[in-house]
Amino acid sequence: MKVLALNSSPRTGNKSKTELLLNHLVRGMREAGADVEEVELRKKSIRSCIGCFTCWTKTPGVCIHKDDMTRELFPKWKEADLVVYATPLYHFTANASMKAFIERTLPALQPFFKERDGKTSHPARFRHPKVVVLSVAGFPEMSVFDQLSSWANFVFGRSGALVAEIYRPMAESMTTPFHRAKAEEALQATVQAGREIVETMRVSEETLARVTQPLVKDPRPFFEIANLMWKTCIAEGVTPGELAERRLVPRPDSLESFMAILSMGFRPEEAGDMRATIQFRFTGEVEGACRFRIENSRIEAAVGAEESPDLAIEAPFSLWMDILAGKADGRRMFMEQKYKVAGDLSLLAGLSRLFGG
Ligand SMILES: Cc1cc2nc3c(=O)[nH]c(=O)nc-3n(C[C@H](O)[C@H](O)[C@H](O)COP(=O)(O)O)c2cc1C
Image (cartoon, protein in one colour):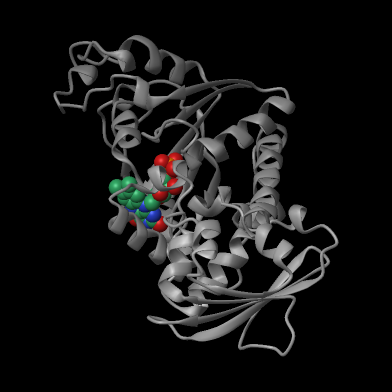
């Protein structure tokens, strides 16, 4: 089976989640024996269809434009048994580059009208390849793909060309360490989906359910962390990509968000067989205490103080958030007695190792 896998994300440098998902789908397709060619549309010049209908009249089947679509991509599209349209979800549908590509496949149709059961269409000029639509979205609910799916089913489904739709919500979180386990399950299921498409021309319900499985039970804490991330980007004048490159941490603005951020940064592999309770008591802009129980490579956060924690830190909230965000040096602040510590000082020294990025 000859497969043309088109990726229309404009993102580079391993930042594209469309690419992440597509790579896994393609891996499965290749494992099942398909001959797959991947094309990044952002590297190609594809002009907009100008609606002249030259491809329907003067040069039937050939577009008037002289660009990468006419020279290279349309011939490949015509030869493919199956084409994967992989697009980021932009404004709840395919992005403009993918839409431009699809509109430029107009030469594949003939101009004539035909009608069946009250539905109008144009007859095909060439054999249409089978279609897989793949998309990723920022929002967590599956319903964000409703419009894209409805469109894909209308455009490719009526002729029987559409064989599968692979949608992944909350895709931006696929690469955060906190969601690694669930994300990996979804990616492995995407590999399986690739195999199934080549072997059976469909994807089973069970595999699809694993691809789309929620990364979190309740998206509300995710929104809070995401909003903190955006606030930090705005305050620091950086894009999310730059925030990640500089290993900056979203700056908590409450006890709850501090507990969430610290828990997300916890590195179980560093904790090993550690059993300890680390407690914070904050003063200033946020007042109150919270504690983290580390045991069996797991962390559990709770509001309030306990009687004898292994390490107790008493600090102004804003100072500790500066230390967390890397804006203040925790060691120096300790020497300058800007915060107080009681208990096991080796735990204090190991904090930055225990709570990474
Ligand atoms: C212009 C634009 C529009 C977007 N529209 C939506 C949207 O309608 N729904 C959604 O859930 N995410 C939306 N997103 C988020 C993207 O789908 C998300 O960031 C995705 O990971 C992008 O794919 P990529 O990483 O392959 O580029 C939008 C992003 C951009 C830049």
